Image (cartoon, rainbow, N blue to C red; front, side):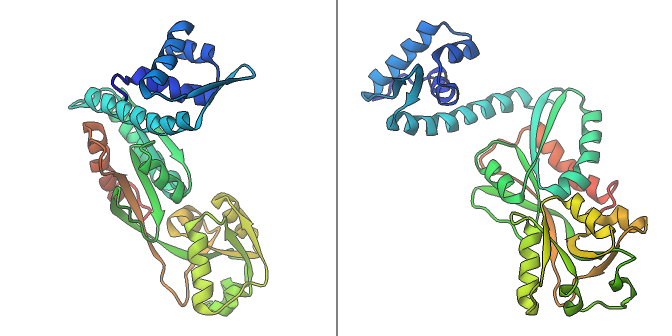
Length: 305
């Protein structure tokens, strides 16, 4: 039965799974190799099962070792979070804030906010991971990030606290040179008959586009599929293609006359930008200040809504 499982031992399990070399683990933890070996043997003695196997010069976790690794990762993340929460308590002079965001808020909202926040609190380290909305949700649930900013049509999770911070609807975009530019009110049939650019399969915009096609009873004869929103915009600007995108994402191109926008016919696709955090994460002063200022930044300085 486990009676003395400290964080160093659990960290050894984590690192052995990644590096599979006792020498490497000892170097990372600034320990002597015999000390690492001692901790490994001690863990096996405490649990009464074999956790590690040596194979061709590498250390491999047994099935029991992998079971322990699963919890070692969770406990390590909680320990790191606890340390950060204490260090950041009631101070904004130092600390770290890990943010994850889907493409639209990461590109069109957060750069200005991060710039302003880092200017006010220069001792704070900010990092931003840009992933799809489902990936950001998973990172939040695993506590790999402190805050998620996600553009999606709906967002609920029993483990996460979510709050909509602004709206962002889906619109049809086409070039001023496209034949639809001469049409006063493009119909679903005219849109579906155009050369279409679809978003990647992991995109929430892709799911909304497919929902629109199903609802309007239309099928696309052919289409391009691009994972990059910037590539989609550049393709549409060439003049032959159309696509559905976030209104927020094309504001600059519309203002410069490079793209036309039109409401999606036969359907209203209002989306929200959500702010999300793990319900069990301690709300440090740093996280609280950022989440307080973000809606004000969007409503005031940022003109994307």
